[in-house]
Amino acid sequence: GENVEQHPSTLSVQEGDSAVIKCTYSDSASNYFPWYKQELGKRPQLIIDIRSNVGEKKDQRIAVTLNKTAKHFSLHITETQPEDSAVYFCAASTGNQFYFGTGTSLTVIP
Amino acid sequence: NAGVTQTPKFQVLKTGQSMTLQCAQDMNHEYMSWYRQDPGMGLRLIHYSVGAGITDQGEVPNGYNVSRSTTEDFPLRLLSAAPSQTSVYFCASSYSSLGPEAFFGQGTRLTVV
Image: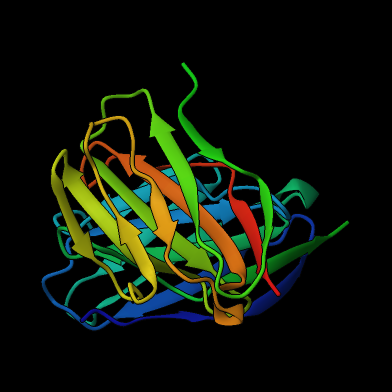
């Protein structure tokens, strides 16, 4: 099956700096890549997603890039704010199943 | 529009007991799934369903059963609870496994003693 690896596991940045989280996947058949944000004690929430026919997608301060050849995709958060502090999960879907990374705990220091 | 409703929020079971976690969605989503979340391991798929009457195993199905008699409901049954099943469980639904959206329930924190 699919194997999704996510790095780093923890990330601390100063408010206003950028944060980058990277994921790799193993199954070239994966064609949908969502990112989720999970605040402490809350449910995961979709923040952005990208499909395999697109290389980059942006939504305000958040962007995702996909390199199909290298089988990796990344989440970029610019101008970070304290409310961005949370655990972020990447995922890959091959069509019927989602495979999640192990999460990145992001702390934005005011 | 309630989204995905998952109950209960907390549960303590004794080893060997059985129980059912309830999940219902009102968005007419075809795809529903159950995950468990353990520290340092992300979300792992237990079972999923692509429509009423159709279920399939995910990554960690042992010890769990599901059924999908209606589009709205997707209960998860623990047959004989074990301490290894102590976890946080999330139900999720989406239009399909190909997105564009996945809605999660509020989660169930299950402790098996």
